[in-house]
Picture 1 (tube, helix red, strand yellow):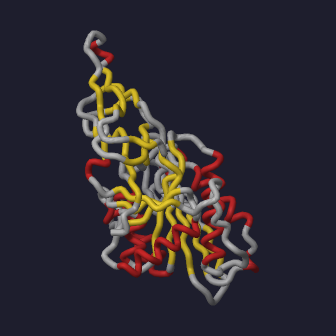
Picture 2 (cartoon, one colour; picture 1 turned 180 degrees about the horizontal axis):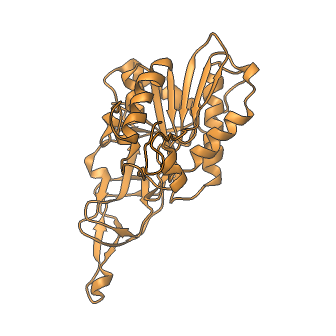
Picture 3 (cartoon, helix red, strand yellow; picture 1 turned 60 degrees about the vertical axis):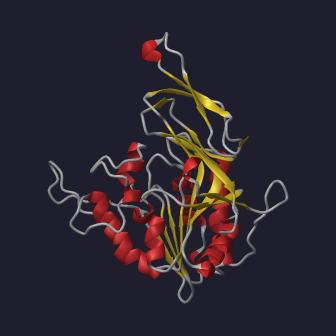
Length: 314
């Protein structure tokens, strides 16, 4: 990507990409490092890219382990060059800032080539997530059914049907615009590398390749409890627990924990005014913790928790 800078008028930033073209067959895209503070995807996709035997491939595999490379190198969610969240930049702008140009390239050059897109996220520094794949609700029952099958073959412990924020500008939305089946993930978080999340990502990538018959083998969709991927949803606006003011949040929950409406979610402390009593924060609906907070300090409007519920099929 072109990136002029002081001392480098014609400089470029070389975004890593691996393409294995095995000829006739389907095409799949795996993306990681869309947010630079999410590390499991960067490790898993790089490892698969090194290990896969090109001679075994039927079709095309496109892998970008660190889409927003400047953010990945800096360990930040937002790109340090233009201050943008790459996953809010699709479809991009060919004459825009760094993230916008890169988004335009992925939207116009890469996405039209693929039938399946898997965008691997892990909640970054701000949150910790239940280990899950994610799919958007779309107004097409056949697409929803096929996407559920894709998610079950990725085989994270949970799959979350998501009615989200700014979703038209994401990598997943770009894939959907081009008619590709699309899932993303949230596996881990808190700005660290979670070993079981790396394993889930690697197994999920391998499973998808086998399910698409790009490589030989049978997908491993087993779960530790002996069941299958549990289907969940985040649909109710009350699923989001927002900070009512600035403060230090003390959560009383962990990811995957079952909660009830009215349960105490935690206390918002005001350390600058030590004599002031903390403000209790309660859950508004029943469900399970999907996202737990990563940072103790919150600002008014920050998400302190997200609740997932059993998928109701609608």
